[in-house]
Image 1 (tube, one colour):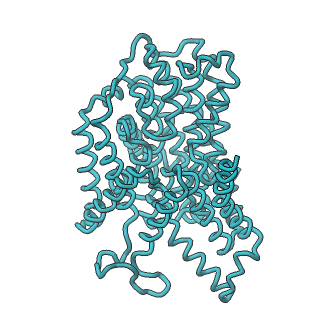
Image 2 (cartoon, one colour):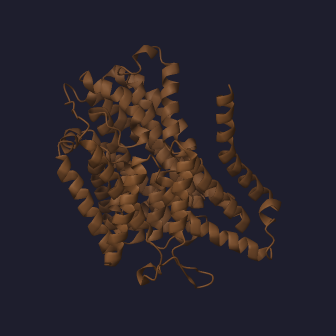
Image 3 (cartoon, one colour):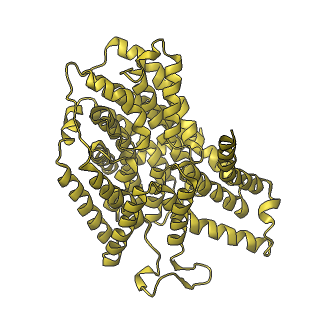
Length: 495
């Protein structure tokens, strides 16, 4: 009952005219940008971070909720009509979605993706509403040593799971941790790694790093690769509505995808890639016509798209309750919180209930707005794909540069943006994941604070991390995530 009352309070915040307007603006902007090839949710949120600078926190995060879900919706359009997944979670959608488009059934593929996303997003948001408070109660039992171990686990899982190489993931993480050390040490008051530049005394702005790596770096990489790729957009033909047979074959995959997406999205580094692939394999195994998969099976679009959007709500549970990002997009959302000087975690629900419950309530509203926008206006989003690529990339780089400057009206931020952007371009060229860098930048200083706090309480006894059962368990899991891949590789090579 307490949760229901808090949600009703959240709706009273989210349904004010101003916040409804911000939610709608976020939905429209993110859908339009998310439709564009090569631009996934993480890049979309990073690109629009500076737009919210100076807004009220509740309004800003209601807009971010619309941006987050809208970018997830928009990615399916690119995957289906252009066979260009905007993010790794859309790869599975592209397999059969693009095959349907080649058969003239692109509209039906987009429809099942949109409706499935709405169904999954709504059910997953209901789950988020009741799961997040339970996670808060669990988090209140954590001490400094437990929090440090939990952050080590988060850093390790994101590094180990995102990307194809553990060594590259660790390199990205160490780069992010190094950036997080720049500025004044909060405990000693001493300047660290500022190179004598006064503007760096406050540290490197997380927003600058996020926009540099995701917007500038990703855009430069896409621009460099574009001239070698050919694009063919498949026009929508015939009826734009699903037949009775399409409905019959879609509704069960929607529900199964939701059941897979939310819990896996809430796991450390569960993200959206794992549930989409699991959904595809599940639907293929349960299908009466498995031979259609890869050739245009509508179940192969319905299930993974539902899993994709359900995982988005799942990602928000540990982000809000524990302050832990489990995906690249969640890392950018965490950067948005830090932009306002807010640290997500168990105390957030008590200190700023309007923000938390307004954000959760806006997910319901944003989902409905997206359904209304995506079905009738699918033809409009398709036309967005015809934007000339040079205009698109130049616009993104200009917008990112202006956004970085307006954060503090400081040219140093612009220089940092482009230095980090070029580094991000190099990371993409060498397949180094950028998400561990953002997570390291954000969680590194927090982990350092918890580490020092635990040592202070234990009077310098470092065994405090091993004598606490919860802390020890989390550290063992983190160690296994690093050690097990080496063991498995050796066994494969030996075989």
